[in-house]
Length: 217
Image (cartoon, rainbow, N blue to C red; front, side, top):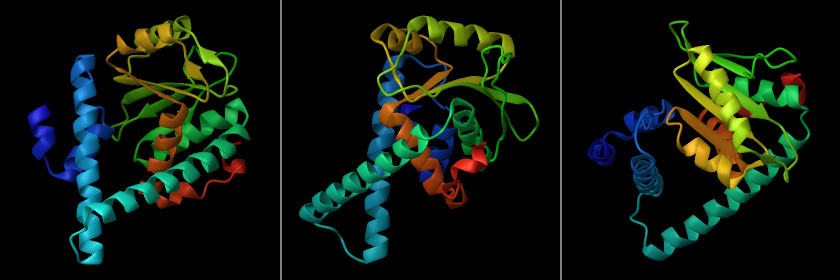
């Protein structure tokens, strides 16, 4: 798999990452996969820049443009964070469901007093339940404990879904992160990773970038 990641067409690699190609592999393999993907992504950015500007960028040019990208990313993260913090928990679940819908899935926020530990359900094009998600719109200083991850794991197993996601505006404790790493089907989005995920989907699907707060209510 790792050899394929280094040579696969970029569009196929993006699709494989989006559909959780790392599922079932060891944490070490997944870490290596992420590293290779980021390296390929940087190369793809440089390739597109060369096509756009019709020139081979110097090392200094690449450095300056990397700095510009980081500053833009910081601004996007700040804007996304401010938006999310304005949402109530139910609206946050709706936003997450909307992000999956823009990627071609059918998704619905199902959270409530009797949600059985599942906040969002995600179906593939054939109508089969593909994924489930837990969404925790907490304060920035709030922590997700390992028992929270284990509780969601139980809900996931009962659901029969193929994969699971944990989205939170808080952070995971060290024990919670260790617990999550032991679950190959689980992808966790917290902190900057959550903000980057939201922005990436909106950037890839511009219509998702026009989603005022009331659309999630």
